Length: 383
Figure 1: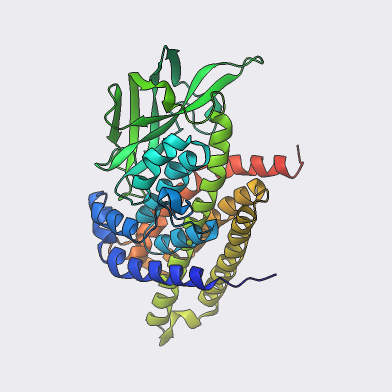
Figure 2: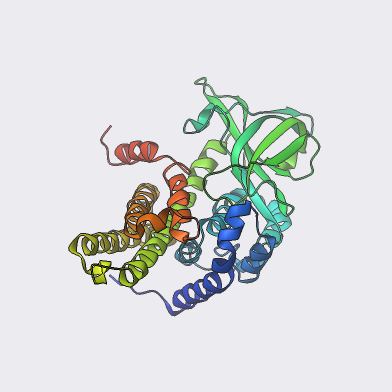
C-alpha cells in the first residue's frame, strides 16, 4: 500500500495552503463578522483552478483525481470554513450533478463557465419540511407541453443567491411510482428565470461568509430540456451527489481540525503559567496527543474513501464513515482547542472561536450524524 501523495498532489496542497495563508487568513475574521460573501476570493480561487478540479479538460476542468480536489478543500478549511464551503458546494453539489448526469448540451452550456468560478451553481434539496427525509419533497413539477412548471421552496441552499450564482439544480416531485412513492426528478433552473427567486439567509452561527439561501418557485416555467438526465432519476442523482458531497464535508472537518490543532499547539507553547509553557503539563500534552492521533486517523479514513472513488470502486459506506468521523473529530479537536486557549478562546479576536462555531454544521449538513449512523448500519448489514 502506497500512502504517499503524488508530486502533483503535493504541489496543489502547497499552492492552496500558501494562498489560504496569504489571501484568506487576513480577511476571514472580517468577512465572518460582516457576513460578507467574498467575490474577490471566489474569483481568485477560480483562477487557481479550484472549481471543476475533477472535471475533464474538454469542459474546462483540471481533470485531476478526486483526492486532489479533497486536499484542496482540506487546505481551505484549515484557514476558513466559509471559503472551503464555497468551493466544496460549488464542486460537489453544483458542478458534480451536471457533469455526471447532464446531457452533452447541458455540459457544454454550463460547465466551462462554472469551472472558471466566474459563475457558481447550487443544489436545491432541503425544504422547510424535508431535511433528513429528503424523499418527502413537497416541491412539484408538472409537464405542460414543452415546459415544466415548478412550484415549491427550498431552504439552507449554498451558493444560490450571489451576484454570480448561475442557477440551481432543484429536485421536485414529477409524479407517483407504482408503489405509491414519489417520482423524483431534477431540473436545471437558471437565475433570473421568471417565478424563481433566491434570497440570502442572515444571522447564521457558522459559515457566515458563505452564501446560504432560501429558494422559492412560483409557477416557474423551464424548458423540457432542463430536465437533468432521465425523468424519475432524481433520487438516485441526489444520493450519488451526497456521496461525493460527504467526502468534501469530511475534508472540511479534517482541515478544520488541523487548523484548530495548529492554533492550539502554537498557543500552548507560547502561553506560560507557573513558570513554563502550558503544553508541558501532562493534562494539556495529552489533549494535544489525542488531537494529533484523531486527525491522523481521520485523514487515513478520508483519503482511502477518495482512493476507492478514484479507483471506481464502491465508496458509499466509506464516504459516510469519513464524513461522520471527520466532522466529529473536528468537534472534539475544536473543543480541546478552546479549552487550551482558556478565556481567550472565547473571544472573537482569536480564530479558534470561529472554528468552534463553524464546526457544528458539519454534524448536520450532508446527512446528520444520526442519519449517517443509520446509513452505515444498513451498509454493514445490521438491519
